[in-house]
Image 1 (cartoon, rainbow, N blue to C red):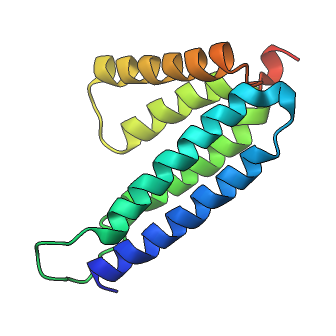
Image 2: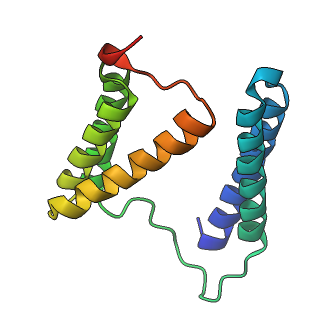
Length: 146
């Protein structure tokens, strides 16, 4: 598959996903109006970016797309992602996410713990502020809560 045909395929998939998000958020109940607005924003952003990808002209000649550059890193990511999915209901979202990001970063070769922990704190802080605080999205608490 060439790069331009891959871009067009992913753009079409992105547009389809944006439409599905829009239609799904349209059916949200009135009590979830804030969450629906956020989903509409995400769907619109995804649609615009997909359209840009669809019409984008690639200056370099089409070359074959290499899907996985490092089989080792890809496999590590899949395994850690699977364990993360299993840990969320038990540990809760925030502890499992922090552990996931720390372990995955370390296994992929990030060896500066200060910056790794700083990045994790910034990402989880942003997720808490936007989703838990402002949008009121219920976050899985695992053994720590309900």
